[in-house]
Image 1 (spheres, rainbow, N blue to C red):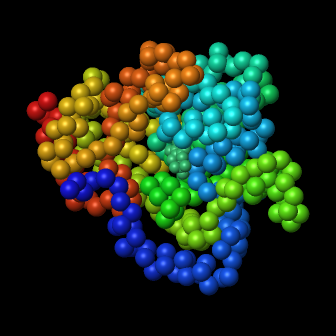
Image 2 (cartoon, rainbow, N blue to C red):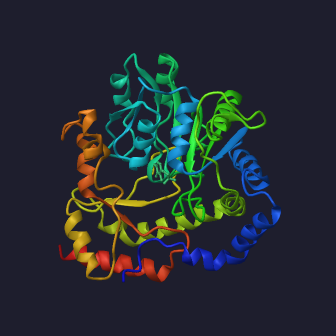
Image 3 (cartoon, protein in one colour):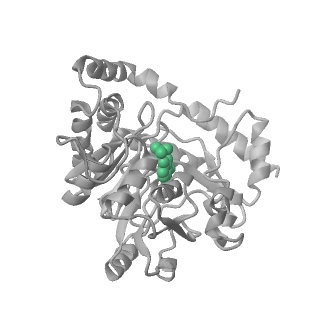
Length: 373
Ligand SMILES: *Cc1c(COP(=O)(O)O)cnc(C)c1O
């Protein structure tokens, strides 16, 4: 069995008492749905960001979907995003009834190429959905300028960037609202599915609370506009409250793992060979995934398998090339950087509880494979 795919078990060993106490606290509270733990987590997660509101939802996909709906996005609208993202970003646009419009990413950081956004704006464009992919923020100022010029809303997809900073500001504080996933592998992960949207806009907050609760104002039991059942679970909320206090430590742990990769592999990098992640000036990277690039990616992955090392690719298939999105009409070749990256990128093991021993094993195997390609 390969030992290198992410697992929460090492973390659970370290935090078991606290996690079990969180579960017990909720079970003994007498309130299993939208109780004090959800309210507490919402308040603390918003405060972490210096924002007024946090709204807990059931997962990150629905955080993006409800976030868009709360901004007024619906059928007939277009939302500009990237194809180099996790498919749920795009599923959420589709789920809100809107049409995803893709722009390409930059070679330097694999994030949205803001220079291409203006040309993608049409009279139907309602919102921009930048994705702070892999753990660092997109170049935000050009997006804000375009949004102001064209009257667009901005929802940040922060599913991979908890605690990341952009010119000193936290991811999630840049747009009109921001969607987070707490999928277990994420920088802040629950012990199951969970998500949240943060904003300082009172109306967006009210919209979100209605949308996640069938479309009702809770006290009146009357549906204003049909919504969803997308509540954050009380148990996950209490676990997230505990883990939020350790978020900065998790990030420091990830950054330490990244530094060790850099020290151990930096001498092998170069054009046409191995490329390690680069942090764009102004960004603080939280390394949700440690994405490296090499033109011989498939051979490297195959060879590493014989060392018992199974690596992930985030992501092997650009969303616009998936059969499920063929109706959008994108041809192969329409997003050349995205398509090239998908063939060349792979991820090295990255999580705070990754032991130096395991990391060294991966480093040694990779050095050996690269020297005999
Ligand atoms: C994980 C992720 C999501 C979806 O979150 P879930 O909690 O799995 O629904 C959305 N966008 C991005 C960029 C993600 O990485």
